Image (cartoon, rainbow, N blue to C red):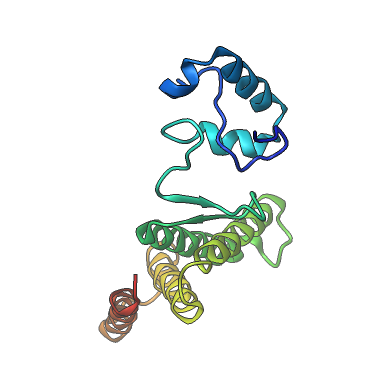
Length: 182
């Protein structure tokens, strides 16, 4: 018999249908439901976010030794997180221009928040991507995006040599993506 204190075992929530085997034993069903409510919140999220009772979605892994450490099995999701981190890098890089040496509160707050989100997402993406590739893509997305935003927002030069250089960075990012094993 499993213990209610074990958050890594299969459990059922009152609003999730239980398996046919458990449905035939109402006492076991009641025990599972009472154990569900005594579990820590992260364990309940783990069981209720799944397509069935006690399972974890195919794209998500929650480590048994650290339920708060979430990683993604789907390699596409890691790249989406990395690109999102790059977009937040663009936000904070452009935001630095508006902070006026961090003398303006709201631009400074947005910039610092974007920095934290960007680095946090980079850390999540690095769990499953090679560190050199992830960092280079993050910096590349941020550099290209920031240069483009500089052209659009601040009227910076859009010379053919500069645009060609940005295109070469984009080619490098694509090359890193294509050459990274899944």
